[in-house]
Image (cartoon, rainbow, N blue to C red):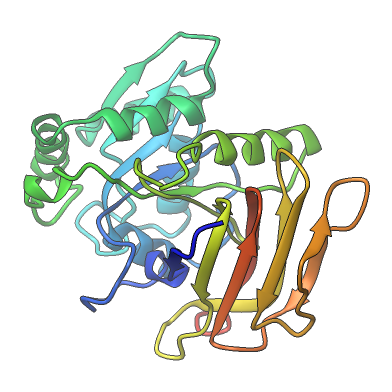
Amino acid sequence: MGTTTTYWQPFDVLNAHENEQRLHRDFVLVVLNQPMELSNIIYAETWRNSILHIGADGGANRVRGVNVRHKVEPHSKEFLNLDLVIGDLDSLESDTKAYWHELGTSIIKDPDQETTDFTKAVNYARNLDSKKYSDLISASTLHGQRTQVLDESRYNMKTRDILCIGGLGGRIDQGLSTMHHLYMFQKDPSYSSGRVFLLSSEGITFVLKSGNHEIKVRDKSQICGLGKHIGIIPLREPSVITTKGLKWDVSDWPTAFGDRISTSNHVDAEYVTVETTKDVLFTIDLDTSFVS
């Protein structure tokens, strides 16, 4: 493996702040059809951090549900808006469709049964040009979903990080499908299309490509931080990993399904480093004790 190190600061997507040292900024938010069980304060922060908000079919029901449950209106800073709903729309409730239509959200039906709604949303985000982005944002702003129009040049970058709100719980096949999609969206070894994060009520998960990685897992200034439990899971094939910064570090450690896998390890430093010969899934739980 080469000596290049890939750096990660996953809490950047969880907390709204203007620090120029942020690694993950101006990302796209994709909401899957999964329960949204975190504090609304955390969701509001991720919304403010992101430049485009997409509901993947039934994900639009989930966002509407949060707004209704917390009784927030479009002009409120806690309101969770959607700029776009996309999918085959078989899970989109009629009341939800009317709700977002009235607020100026673009709704696109893609009947292709060979791709999932998750894939449709991510592909749309990656292929959207700055002009279409500006049109989506302008429509949301016109109908009061947004308080300001973002500079369309912020969307004019080749590399676009994506935060997916969903989960790995529930049915096993659905959880495995989500893991499969995370891997499929990160085939490029250099992350040239951007990085993809999965945020659930339990933690945040992303793919570490073959090579060296340094992940910042501690930041006391944030309203929501990362927890102490870490898992490093081989995906497509067995891997050999070396770690630093964990309570139980390993060196040149073979890991594979049907053999040994690293789960329930504990953070023991501000940074965790992982060297891996093959792609692995990195997951860390959340510390939500900062908020009610």
